Image (cartoon, rainbow, N blue to C red; front, side, top):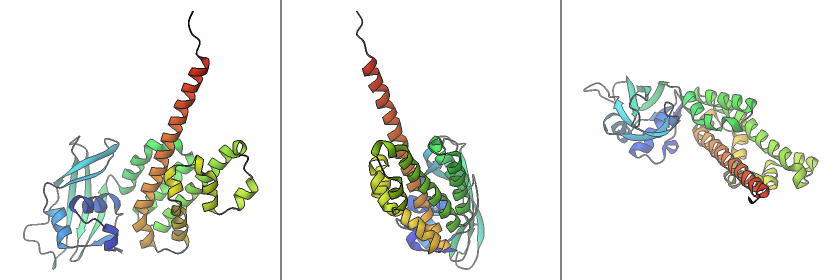
Length: 267
């Protein structure tokens, strides 16, 4: 599957390397240009940002190794390269990628940790915000995307999205006096508008995410879904992160409120 050049906008050194190494699923080929060739194989001081499973945080990585054989002719031969990058904070935290270099394209054919493992580790900090069912399906979505199954990955993310909206409705329906029958009969955009004061601002502002997921299930190709999946995954993490911060702030406010109410001056 050859991804379009549009999937790699911002074709500057670190931007391209990050997109290819961290966000492109296995076996998805990209066009091999002279500039991309130089970025990956000739820039020995290459720096790029990505999630480090060892640190459990986003870090800057430096290229450690990964070159084509001396005298290799790109337009007439193909080869395989073991490409290693190391965390600049902890040198022993390393990611390995196995790259097929074709006459006109590039493709990752393996990596360690896996594409799914990196994404799963990145989402662990939000695990308490997800039910066991949501955690399992989020991991399934990542696993499917890592193996080139974009439409299936979209199905699981859509289920998580719908449960998030429905659970928030159940949480606040009595306090807000909402009508459940009206809610169930409403379109998703209308549901989001109804719940907007109780949802992350990113989700409210980017409610089109749901329509894109639905489109992916019914109309988009596997290629389209895989190209958009990194954006969808990142959007999901933005929503979870904002939701986490909001709940933490509410918990802190509640604790301060109780402390104020129970305060009694000492004699």
